[in-house]
Image 1 (tube, rainbow, N blue to C red):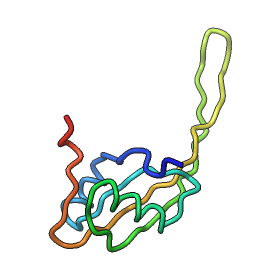
Image 2 (image 1 turned 135 degrees about the vertical axis):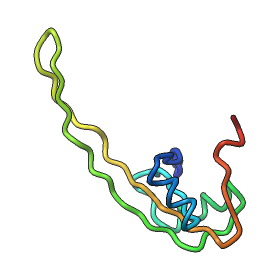
Image 3 (image 1 turned 60 degrees about the vertical axis):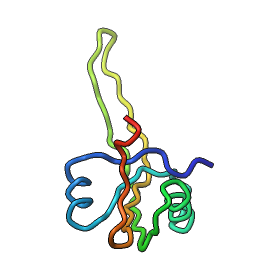
Image 4 (image 1 turned 90 degrees about the vertical axis):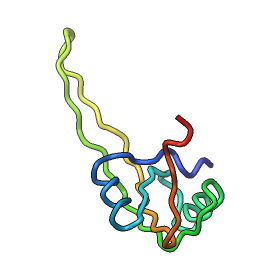
Length: 96
């Protein structure tokens, strides 16, 4: 099971990173905090102090097309906010 899907790179997540040394990831819906902590430590080689998770519920979407109205729903996912030990960082832009 792939636990970490992708990092969340928004303005709000960037403020958390700058002020509180917290990083945000989109995770597999079935993953728990222990699995998320182990995945981050293995992937980035850092020490995780705390893991907070949120389940983001999908929103209803509607759009008009030539053939009529199409209705659907975006997928739900789990978001994890990771607090790192003081002095450690993760560089998401090193691969670019």
